[in-house]
Amino acid sequence: MTALSNLLLAIEALTHLTDAVTEESRRLTIEGNALNRNICQSITSIFDASDALSIPAPTVLISGESNVDLLDSSYDGEPWRVILGKTPIAEKLKARKYEDTLLFFSENRFYQWIESLDPFVTPSIPEPDFSNPTTIRIFGLQAGFGGELLWVLTINSAAPEIIPTNLPTTSNVHSLIHINAADKSLRVCPKGFAITWGVQNNIATSVFRMNALVLSSCLVQELKRIDGNYEVTLSGTKRVSLPLFKSGQSVSIATLNKLLEAICWVYEERPETRLKLVMDRLSIDSQAGDTLLSCMDSYLEAALQQARDSYAFVILERKDAYHKEMRELMKDMKSQADLYAGKVRELVSSLTRDILGVLVFIGFSFIGKFDQKNLLTTLESNELSLFLKFLACYLALSCALQIVTHWRDSNLGYRESEKWLNVLQNYTSRQDKEDNFLGLLKKRRSTLHAAMLFTCVFYVLLVFTTWNLPCIVNFLLHPFNH
Image (cartoon, rainbow, N blue to C red; front, top):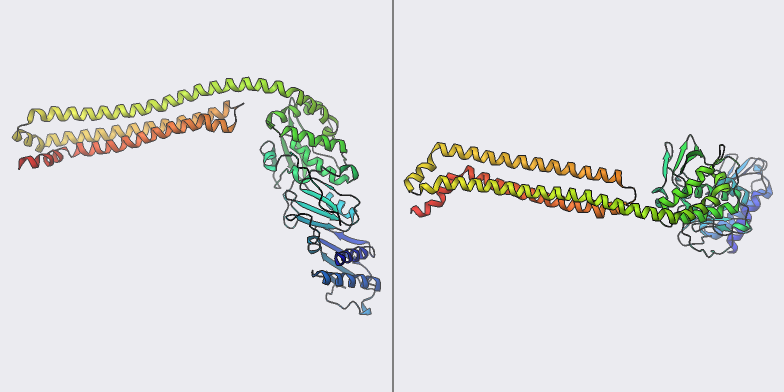
């Protein structure tokens, strides 16, 4: 740890020798207008500490030139720049086995970097992805703070003991709220930005505001980004659109805690119903000129209390409405199932009718002509051959019309069932729709399709037999003639 401490102290000392310091998530740039011996000694100390840690040394540019000799006094007074990649150093400070570790050498520069982040935009490489475990080490930080995924720690502090929260996942939030953006890929990730511990010991206003923005966005119907500005929609007793926040707007620790409490309650069970109850009160209380953050700060506590009080009564009403809706839907599904069953019976009835017709024809045509001479004459007649061909064509046409008609009715009936289910489905879930309604119809539909296939095969055999009846009869009689 001594070599790492020496490196951190040497870098921190160099930042005090100039005012031009730019710190990003993965890189630190230090520059000045006039190189001197003190600066050269600090840079040399950084090189020595980097060698001791076996990590890449920073890039040094003097008058735009690299690979220069720092001991050469001819460079004194020249403009200089040191570019340091912080990732190799941050890797030495990991608090968890699987995490993205960042390092900042100044608390103020960390807050400036946080201010530049948009928590809703999906980050691109190499920026950190806060939806995964992320630890940020800050040189000079007094006390750490963070949540389940995001930890902001001092340089030497150990991993804190974290109590898991019931905050929803990104997919759970996206299944409930609508994201609307034409220029960016947006997401709402409450676990990635939630601050649940160490809050009382810090005044990290920018971090807390980012946390509040993300948490507040979990309690709206729609989040929109228009020309770089965010707007949200509350759809309750009134439908209200308001900006997400105003520049410089702060948030209290009490509001942060109430937001955490509200989101955990809303997404615990029946989130659609609970969110609607919270938005009902917020939409009524919101005033012209409010932002979502100011609404949460002023009205969330009362909205959450009213939602909890109303929830039990709403659930009882929804339960009665659910059972009523289920009964109505089951009646509709029974009529659809009877339709499929009726079509199967129609196919079987038509098939047996045509088979019986052919048998009756054969019986009347040949029973009275069992005399071999008369039978052979009848089989060889052109009239019988022509009639059999007409009969075979009738059977083929009958099969085609039945199959096409039943196939078309089956598809239209199933689509109508899906459409009406979507229109009438106010209290039943998608899983209920699949298991209790469409699943049963699919089985009936499969039975109809199997009956149609069997009917087609049988009709093909019947058409073939009818068309070639004289040949088949001759073939069957031939053994007896010998």
